[in-house]
Image 1 (spheres, rainbow, N blue to C red):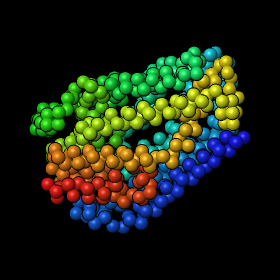
Image 2: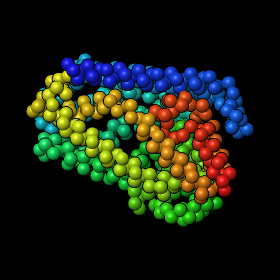
Image 3: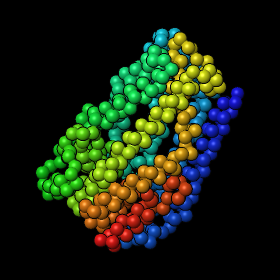
Image 4: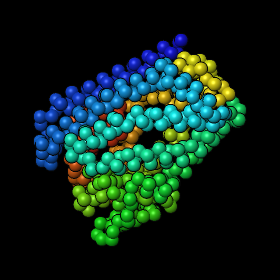
Length: 418
């Protein structure tokens, strides 16, 4: 029962830490709600600042509920016998790899169904309350069904191949499975812009005009080859705005949310895109892939050890059917428990991400006037109701981008140096 106790302790400590961080975030934002930070008082009204505070607090509190729900579901699947019951069912319906594939499909479907109520509440209650929701209920259900279908069509063959390797490739199966998974991930990055993303959104070429020409000039200065500039109909779901590039090689696309183009001027759009191009020029994408590859290799290695360890199953509430689906059960258990053991390293990943954001900001400041990126960021903070006063410790764990005040201060210093 040693691992059972370790597992329960990891879950309890992880949940307690997440709730503690969330409570700090709520308190810190509430304490700073009464006045706009001095560096933003000329650009952001008290009303907008308080809206961002209330929105951030509401999202954080909803996240606290989600933490408790996820932990409860995890216990229901593991120690309370949920996975064992599903295995008993799937092993009578299929055999061998197909039984394992069915096990993963059932678990995934149940998890998706259990996630629906909170997702619905977030979209149609919380987002609606603050004026961000533009999604119709039919689109919400349609997205959910499409997600299930795409997940089955894309994930099904990959999972089948991994299960086959686990059964047939010997003790070094985890090396081959990792190589397959990593190669498949690269393939998806290449296919995402042209095959997967259009399933959920409509992409139209950015129309000719001053904005398009300015962007093309920026791409030429930066030496960035793109397969096209596109506008995504993000407004059919939300009023939040963003811009990104996706894909690999010649399939790279630059995508603007229509909501972003409607809110920013050409100077600001150029600055935002220069920041995104900074990630490309500083090789952040390649570095992320390298970190992901190394991290996933370590995880596959650990999974390779645990998959052949009887106590890993029994102490998590499962009696594996070695003939029908033990490999799949190893995958399911590992993916369920992993986040509770790795949560403490989140600050390291967040720090690295924020470091990359600073580097991309510095690159953008070289390609476009820093004040244009500052004004664009302030506008996005305002439009997206992003809090200007996050709790430092909560931010260290969760925020992939630097806090607003630090980021703006850094850009202003770059502006002063020019």
